Image (cartoon, rainbow, N blue to C red; front, side, top):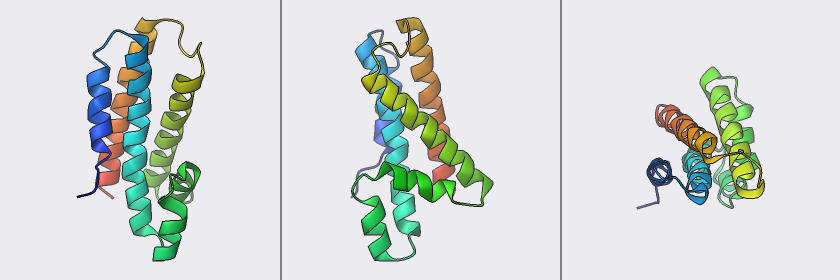
Length: 128
């Protein structure tokens, strides 16, 4: 059985209950990766050829997965692309920007909000 990215979002929810900065920053990353994994799985299934799916989506090609949904004319897919992009940007900031959020209270709010965005994006993917 293949790994389900939803487990990452479950982990994010758990980490959001923590008070430490490292827990909250990790929660943001797990929220992004949960959605990325599920979106990559869908993009792979929707690839026009098996070779296209292998080339674009199996090597962790984050921008290609994002482009897959951005290029759609469907409103739900475009909204999903915005959510993926927002989560990706937040993950980059949480991982690399020491001044991302000035204090743990604001960081906790951000982590909880992003975990909610991730849950909503996962539901969107599941309904496609």
